[in-house]
Each structure stands twice: as C-alpha cells, then as structure tokens.
Length: 450
Ligand SMILES: *Cc1c(COP(=O)(O)O)cnc(C)c1O
Image 1 (tube, rainbow, N blue to C red):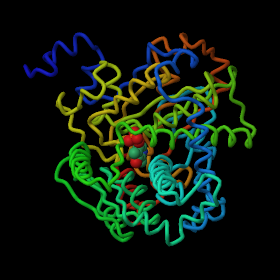
Image 2: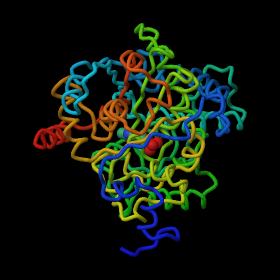
Image 3: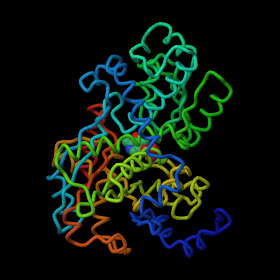
Image 4: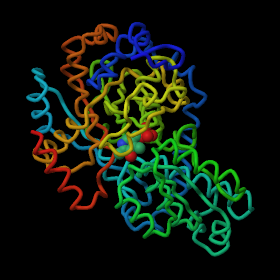
C-alpha cells in the first residue's frame, strides 16, 4: 500500500511506531504509557484543578432538590445521580479462566450502566452540562441566585426563560439521550444530531420525550459538525461540544469523590500497598478522561486508570501514541470506525483529553467486537448483570495489566505481593435502558460466539 497519511506512507508509520502494525491489522493490543508521571507533576498538563471539581460537586448539590422533584427516579437519593459499586467474584473466575490469569484478584463493577435518568455514564457529564447552562441563564436573567432553593426552576418565570432557549448536541446515542431527556425536562427546545449508527430505540425514546432528532448518513464526526454549524447560526442555541467541553469533563470528574466514599463504606482499602486499577471504555475521551481526573484527585497515585477502545475505533490510543491527537482520524489509516460498541464508535479523539491526561493515564488497550459480545454473555451468565457491548470493554483490563511485558509493573514498583492486594474495577458505562428484546438479541449473539 502506498497511501500517504499525514505526510508519511503506512510503512513509514509502522516502522516508526511498532504498535501501528497490529493496530492496522485490528489485533487487540495494549500500550502502557512510558510518560506516566507522579500526580503532582502530571497535573501540570491540565488547566483544571481540584477546586473546579469541588465546584461541580457543589453545583450538583444545589440542583439535587430540583432533580428529586423533576425526576422521580432520583427522589429516593435526594436528587443525587449515582450508581452502585458491586463485587463480581463469579465474573472474576470466568475472566481468570478465559485469559489464563492464575493469581486471584478482587473484581468490582461500577454500574454507571444503571445510572438513573439515562442509563449510561452520560448521565454524569451530559446532565451536568445542561444544569450548568440552565443555572447560568437563570442567574444572568436575575431570576436565580446560588443561595436559592433550586426547586424554583420549575416555576413559570424560569420555565418561560428556558422555553426561549435551545440546546443542541451531536451524538452516537447515549449523550443525546442524557442531554435530550434532561434538557427537555428543564423546558429547553432540544435538538439531537444523530449519527447513522445510532440505535432506533434511542431515537424513538428521545422523540417520545419531545426532542427533535435529526439523522445523518455519516458517522459521529459528521453529526457533530453539522449540529455545530446549525447551532452557531442561532444565538439562542447552546451547542454541547463533546470533544472540548471542560464543563462536561467536570461533570464526569465528580465520580472520583463519590467512588472514594463507596470504597470507604465497603471497607476496601486503596493505598500504596493496595492499588486500584480502573478500566474505562473510551469514545471521544471526555467521559473516561473526566472520571480518571476525578479518581486521581480522590485517590492520588494509588489509582491506575486504563482506557479501553474497540479494535475498529482506537482513536485515543493512536492519537496519544503518535502525538497526532485530534489531527488524526482512524479512518485515515483504513480503520473502519464501525463497531457494535455504541458510544465508542469515535474516529477522532479529543485533543483536550489526550493532552491534559497524557501523564495521568497508565495505559490503553483495544478489544475486538466479538470479544465484547462474548464477555456480555459471560457476565450475564455468571452474575445476572446485563450491559450493552461498550460497557464490557473494561473486562479484559485485568489480563492486560497482570500479563504485560512492557516493563510497566516494574516501572511502577508493583511486587507480586502488592498485585495480590490490588482491586480491579470495570467501569460499566451503559446498558440499563436497552429494551428487553434488544438485550435478548445481544445475549444470544454473544452466547453463539462462545
Ligand atoms: C459515551 C460512552 C462512553 C465513552 O465516553 P466518551 O466521552 O465518548 O469517551 C463509553 N461507554 C458508553 C456506553 C458511552 O455511551
């Protein structure tokens, strides 16, 4: 092949970057970050701080009474949108057998798949950005102050204000669901620009909530571009930018302190002798990036975050590995960006996340679609938990860490004893709202591959 990509032919890319060859062959790979640095240094790469995360957390507290009233599904938690942390020992045994992991390990599942309101990790960042925007509008209009009881947002004066404003977003599905449902409930006129790969049931659900859904023949990148253009032409419209939004990122980051409290409540230690490995499915990067940032602030150097992507959409890995970041689209290298993993079908990574987190993340790996489907069936069989395919991307992580041959364990000073005390956590990012029939089809496809 003599195609030139960014001034180099594919052979030159492969010679300079050895991991490119298996990536282009769509083989599952792992890459442990040689630039990993202690948190105090790594924080120098990011413009955000612990104070920003704290303010996001306080903002969510201010909104809690309103959310409890507007969304019956969070009434029981006083308007706090949070998911369960559960241990999955039977799935740990399944993974041990599947990947030949001989040492025992503790395996946890963070069920963002079952977050209230939108059934995916996007209920963190997406809803937060809608709330942030609503608060700004209300304060600027002189109709709200941060000391107020936010249940006031449901009153006619504020509803009339929101009705004069619009929110738009480009999405492969789940972000549209979170932003669409939340912003329609607040009273905004809402448009979701959906890529061709988005599931029909997600479009139907949004329309049932009064959201305008515009469908595109192209992928996520094109849906975003078109949405952005339309929104720019309308001053009353706020476009939510998944690739570069620090607001979205901060909404996700609040997960760090929440998870820390859950670990404390369950009496699970995280310290130098008891490291925590967290495996996060990555699309454009804002979700896993924001969560990883929050985790690093909460647990310091004792948490180790690793991103997981489909073999057909390894945009963040390739962007960070080559240093091309958002200049790169996997399609330019002949990789399809077609995957069963909704939410991960992203060809161009967020440069903001790739650069901001470049010394904070321990590594990246890829996983094939068929393996996601098998893992989906295996998790259901062993634990009775049903997730959407993307949410299984974290499952092979423990095998990559324990079997790595890149000097990573040594570099971080992990002895066998320390590794035996480690906790591994799979961040389950979606699945709670998948219709029953769709889920049955996922399960039978997965089982057929076993
Ligand atoms: C969006 C999404 C992700 C990844 O989030 P990004 O911000 O795109 O990296 C992971 N899993 C699911 C189910 C998602 O919807």
